[in-house]
Amino acid sequence: MLGPLPPTPDDVTTLGDENPESVISVIHRQLVLDKTAKSNALPFVLQGYASWVGRVALDPLKVTGATREFVCSQFEDGDQSRWVIALLANIGSRIGSVEFVEATPTRMLSLLQTAVRRRLGDVKSRPNPSKHELVRVLESATEATVIQFYASPVSEAMTLLQETMPIFRRLCPGPPDAPIDLHLLLQHPSSSLWRYAEMDITTGVLSDMPTKFRYQVALPGSQLSNFYRSVTPAIHNDGLVQWMRGIPNRILIIFAYMKSLHQNGQTPDEETVTSIERDIREVPLFSGSASDRFLVIMRSIVQECWRQAAFVYLYMAVCGDSSDTPRVKEACKRYMRLLKGIKPGRLPDEYLLMTLQLVASAAQRPRDREVIKQRALALRSRDRTHGGTTFVILVMEGVWAWADAQGRPIMWSDKAVSRRRVIDMLLPKKYK
Image 1 (cartoon, rainbow, N blue to C red):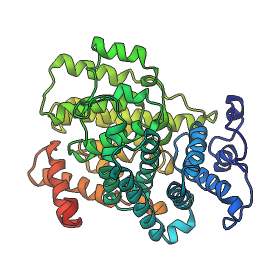
Image 2: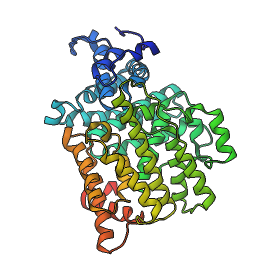
Image 3: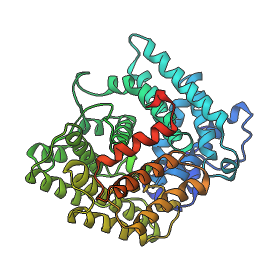
Image 4: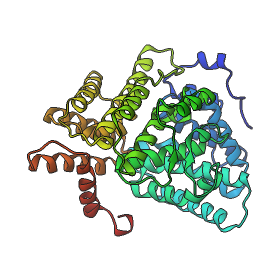
């Protein structure tokens, strides 16, 4: 019933890189399944989840083993867990399909949200839940949050992030009131901790709101940073977050450090800025599984776009530069050259949405702004995913309009002003 074993490295190299059926065949052998038959329950879930991973992962073949392990462990963990993983597989398999475009599975998304929140509540209500329980609940909540970011209003995903906070904190190494050491999370056996931290950091960076937790990151270029890099190989390597979403581990750590500076109101000196710049430039190339030259190029472009977005964030958010300073204009120019050099499409645009939001604050030319806006709009109109794109575009346009109305370059603080105006216009009070 469990299907074939996870692939060996030799198996992976023979698979078609962009063909969803290739991913499905690794996670579960292709069968025509009757989902109503009890004996087919696990194979059906495996097949549905494989479709989801093949659709959303930047390098799906890299995550097949982890996906299979996750599905099987959740399926064997009791009725609540089995119900959640079945919903995840059912919704995930529809995302990007004609069925999803014609009718978003609102009912199933609501059931998923309710089931995950109930499971979180059950575990949090017990005084001493086991580590096994905490890990399983965090894993399913993290996956559900990703699904909600794709298919629901942003508020649904943010609700899950908020309610998962105590579980995440209990699993993190160190005292409850201490900053969370990101380097230790990279070494943790459960990748769900790193994935939760990634969502906390990126949503904090994009929204210009405080992160839910404080993170401990060594100063780039320092002796401590070099020590961590020598004892934590995962910092150099691409991992689950990059395979799924295109964000290199090292870029995420740099963003966490920069976010901490910005959040604490610290303006770095020239030496610190130089160290951060060096770290951004030295992020290693993405070592994906693709043998197809097109896929290699697309995945490299995603990484390079993250690099330029990191420069924009460093100069504008951390250093306080306006959009018309030479170094901001140069980073924006390099990013736009990459973006305009590739045709619009799911690959790579789906993995660039967060970088589009960051670079939008540096875009001064009307043509650049229009390209950014249209690339973001296309993601929503193509297959009805990325429900938060409307919010993102409204914030972008608000930033541009606010600065233009005052006849000045854009400042990073304009983002918070625009965000507040859009929230006041769109969202219920409980999310403000």
